[in-house]
Image (cartoon, rainbow, N blue to C red):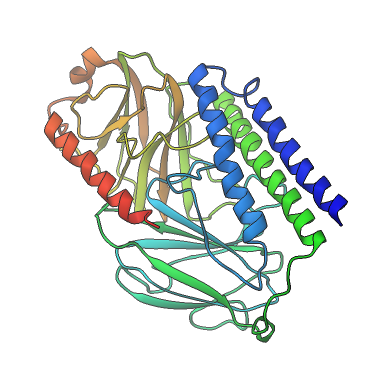
Length: 389
């Protein structure tokens, strides 16, 4: 027994050590600060996937694990979301009870794995709106069992249920709360202690989760960048096996300190849309607590001609719809729109910051330094509430 446990532990440690070495060389970003980000990212992934694989492994004893918060990010998280995941078994039934508080919407996806894993995909999805649930409401959902009102199916192959909570106004207010419980009779008895085989399997799964996440998302970004042109927003796309409601467009930037990208778009007709900036290599958000690196449909200012213009730049141009790139020479900007019937019409232009006024015109909303500081302070207050422990 001790030999098996020791071998499993050493294998876990060796795989993580090897991954830490790997992110310091090709094909990961080579700049010194990017390598700092990469090592920190590996540590975050260890926290995330060890938690999921070791401590959230039993669908008989489900608990929500919060991911993609201010600490454990992966896979291009949405700045307007809280992500919660719980294990499920299609042969069982579960009850989820909660209260929305200030949460505007949620997407509930039943999945057969995370996108970076060898087996993944969304097999069922619904939303709070679909279920008649709104801000402030109490709710109760049943997962699995016979179809009926308030019942969410668990198709064959499902291993997890994922909530994406949406916060539009970024108010300093109570976020949603929810709990999950298994309804089967056999969970009434105390759970047995973990066996050697359980720990061996969970440690191996944890190491694989870290490896897949770190390597997959770096490759994903490199692949998508190779298909397009820097500083130009690519055509709309839908992620295969992803959420049916979701549409995206990518713009990889490569900008000097005195340059900017102007992203001009029609207003998407979906009930949620946003623009957000991401790091290369890690696919984490450019820090939303320190930078205005995201804006959603409630936060943007629409110009007098009915279009929305964003300025992607390293320095504050005094424009309301500034997307702060956090001083990163390269990165990814994502335009996303959900629950829409059509795609927006958009274009990007690269300009010198000194020529910005010639491109934007007189109808673009401006802000001064005190207003920007107040906006950032309000964003931090909201994030402190949303991700409180």
